Image (cartoon, rainbow, N blue to C red; front, side, top):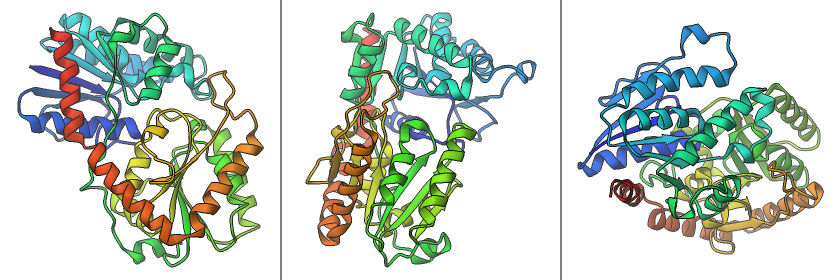
Length: 396
């Protein structure tokens, strides 16, 4: 069986959970040894057998970013001929998979990592291109032989966003974690290099600066934390100048009231992220939209308890009272995920974080339970097997 996997992100150009998912899924499928797995990704050439990269078309250099994406998709679609399965990830790759599947006469599978109708703020970034990305995603989902949701919560969002889909075509296969790559590393020198004191209690956030990650809510909550608690923000790649300016303003304000506020805007090597996680007391995930949240699994694998919003697929990962805390949220039903009462959400988030750092022995026990859960329930080998089952189901 030849499987063509299409993704914008692929190592070394990985900046989000979808890219992590694709890299690990490809490895798991190749390790099985029963399929020819080919990767078609965006960008510069990769030095990896079975992987082809496609640059932006120079003719579209001045076009809207969404149109540049479709230019890459068309190149990819042409090369899918001969595939038995075409599998795309995120709207960036969906049209490549949709067209490639039609050209090849092969079933197109979509894995849903996020949904354009659930991210209306993308219009801030793409302008009119948001309408193009929404069209591309809808066409791909409605034409797919099967859709894979990374959580049960995500499956509900898919069926709500695209009600014409046959529910029988939407399967749940969770995201996973490589527990060998993500495990505790004690390295005080790395922490100090980035301005973190490994001996002080700390909350840590790792993620992009985008509306769905809820970073401004966390920064407001941080102002309410005990003064001895550090706030470590591994946060970069802002979606827009506006949200970057908002975060920088909140950061400056926070630093006027407390010390130990560490902002690391660049993407760090994994070993340095792991060292920062290991030295922290609790991981904070204030997302208002999160199909599953690989970052929570990464933190759990590093023996860190998690305080996270009870939204999307997060409750399928974080077990309250066992591996962390879930912060309740009532959300505006306009697709933005905005809290109905932002002040209440901030206060509830601050209360959960304060509780988490108040007893470091308990936090440590929850962190150990979190790693056990990550190892036992979210292995990539299992996810590769389940994904292969979806492939076989559409081939008959």
